[in-house]
Image (cartoon, rainbow, N blue to C red; front, side, top):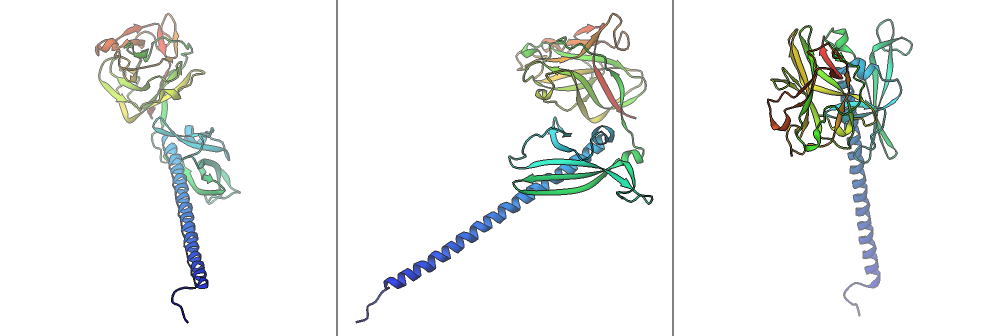
Length: 334
């Protein structure tokens, strides 16, 4: 008699077919995930390499001599975004996004008699080859391009150190800034222009003496408490050197026009403000200085000051230190 239903053999066959199909679907899904992950990694790597090229171009635009021409050929440099700007560091910052190693290599460029790039030509000091390389796991991607010092060829204005005092070798706490929450105010340095200038940045000679002072920024003012003519980018104070004095750059987002034969001040500020007791300002930064009986920089009238705006008094011009001057550099377009 013929019985209805499936026999054991049919069940085994159907189970095998279903299992094979499910395994195939699983393998296809796994392969799809791998392909998507690989595509995502490739895209991230390309974007990181493109960002590296853009960083090199921004540094070129800022200063060819300082940021590009001074770097060695065939050396590894790492793009680092710090204090609101890019730099190429010889020290690796570690993995990007916990996965990628990113670096930039600069090489010299040679040109032949027809001005074409040629390995047998003469060195073109105003052009560099840029290789942006991103590697992860066993994979790697590269972008190669060239950057040129076109501002020099077009005779564009160049950023030049214009007014400065670089002999401020004393490294001690003169200004008590940012005053560790006590509201003792800000330090400042006076200077007088010769001709009219367009200021792009200032550099101050600083050292950090505590682990994490408040972040800082610089102002150009008509007087210690007068009109603010320009405010720089903020600097993360934990990046300031603790081992020795170092020049710290404060860049102004817009050029600051200063008139000829006029006295101005660089005022160093903090956030939270050092002028307000209980504001939360913390830590101490030493602004390198020099002392002499006749004022070490420019004679009397271009003095250092401290305690400006002390205890929330915006009109307090602070204490005049006519025998002291802080170290500073002013850069302007020439």
